[in-house]
Length: 512
Image (tube, rainbow, N blue to C red; front, side):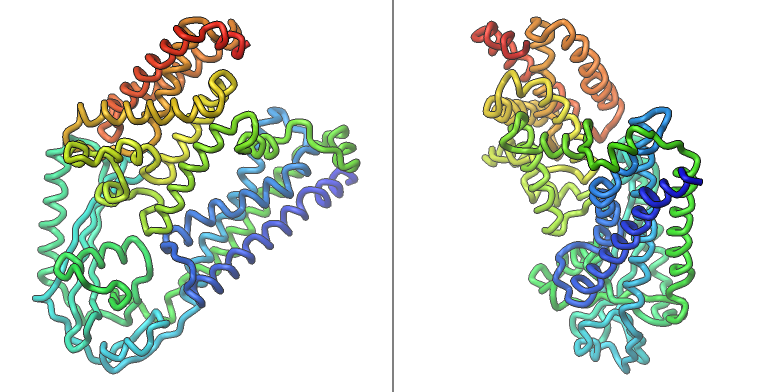
């Protein structure tokens, strides 16, 4: 009973408080600054899903990482990481589900006589239009494809069709078709699938009944908004985005728009609370850790503090920290400019500074540099930064901050050159070529015995697990630019050989 009270007081109740405060904070923040004031220039997909996945991480790491230490677990590190992950997910689930509720609860249904009246209700979202007609012959369209999934293993086709309402300038009736399939097959096969999708969609749209609608929902700032706007701008490039209103039809009754959302919010939160409670109850207490916790002793192996120290630009790994912040900073700018958090299109990446042979041959050599810091979605960025961390840990103490950054950029540029030599039309982005260059340096320092015997055992394992597996996977996947990877690896190895030739004794001294 005593252990139960301790676990309840020191771990579970703080978790409940942190969970409720985090959920309420994010929902209130979203309601005020996005839904009501409209001052957050981020897409709905980001606010609905991806930010809610990130928000709970800090509260759990800051306020709960120490209390979790009083639990005695079999596999200590994995056990603690698992409990933290479950705590984070227990908060994430109700936040994500509640976003659908608060967006719908924030607006009432506005009844209009015709579509032209919508201009005087700019802040509203739901409309019932008693009399409307659509000019189907003046429709505009835009078709695109995006990849998704952990390894871009899904191929998603989209067709956006926008038809103007008659007697209502800049008001559009939106119709979307989409289809998802495995990202397999040759380019020719994928083009055939895309063509079949477009043909099917066109046949379906030919018999589309525009009056089958209970009410309309105005499209917010999202990937769908981008699709419809691209369709409009294909015909009218000078169309002002802020003046366009896109309405999509809803066939269900307005009163039924919530469904079971609220039940799922509380249900998911309750399930999360129950799972965490059971985990805590069935875990024993580490008496020494409990005494340290009550004495407010600092943690000896504090993961959060270690991460913060690593990311200190003035610290031991300042070069890596600077590179990580630059890559993350560029990605944040991409997101605020409206680029997809998960899977940007090739056109978007090219406009931002992505690498392609055609543009470089025409004199846009700066793309060899800018493409290093542009990433194809969050997962691409995360995996590359993880590789950068491992590489920097083994290199920065030997090379120093400036040489590490210069090596990263030089290998990235040379990797980009290798990419455009091999690929005629591929759009290449990302830091992976530069990171493979760092692993090429590690390979050179390993082969020529710059590292100590103990460290060489570690470097061989890392080279096989990261560089080797990545190269093998890349050769089996059409979505990976292995030319850049090989080019980066070879350029890094060559750079390492040059450094060894001119400064071997000093390198050995620093590696020791």
